[in-house]
Length: 340
Image (cartoon, rainbow, N blue to C red):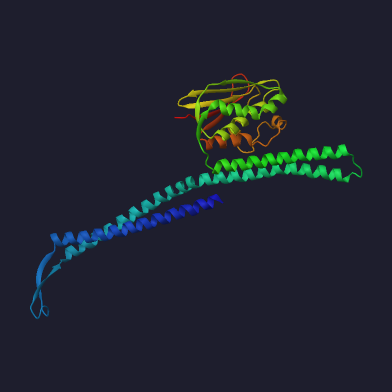
């Protein structure tokens, strides 16, 4: 599809180039011939006076006219011929070079569209797969339950609880998908605030999860006033903490650090888990990407958290990256703008 689109776009660019070349060539041809005739008239033409009768009540009025000899006519024809050949050669060279450049520029123009199309197709396929899993579970559980002739109240409660868990998963997926769209299209309102405010708020969000896994926190955040959207950055940090708790060991420690560097504020979250494989590291911020399937299948989720974190960072004019620590665990680093 994109190959044919590239050819069509190349032809469109060439059509514009042909129209431009023809207009320029025709204008140059007319102007050059006019100037040549005027110069030839002034330098080589023989100007005479001719009395034309029948004008001004019968009085003769002198009228100038120009005569050329055969040599001058041959020279003018030769100049026109040379000019036509040279203009034709220039136009052919321009079209050849323009065709190559048009094809290259068409490719450059379509590259981001093609990348977005591939990402959209991959995202639609992955999202449909992720949606199908909880829906299938709901359907199977209810079908099996309805086939029973007799069931007790505890069994019914267990089924309803399981259904609610699947519904919650669907709700979380829908909310994250909506948030991804929101952060990609809606501008945020920026203010200046202290880093510790989003740190305190994010810790409250993940308090129950950390308590259930008996994970502690080590706070190494240096005080600094940053510039961005408070709520979204608090959500970003909560995502990073949630990710560190899930992939870190039970009874482990999650480190939150921050410092001023090169006119920006670096805020990072580090866990004590196994880290990220070199193969997965460049892709962990992609939508619905989940590396190390054997390990991630035990964690749960959809692989939308870190992609949402990147969308939030981009919306706040910030950068986010991931790296492995020398000892163990992964470190997610956000580079935030500071308040002026």
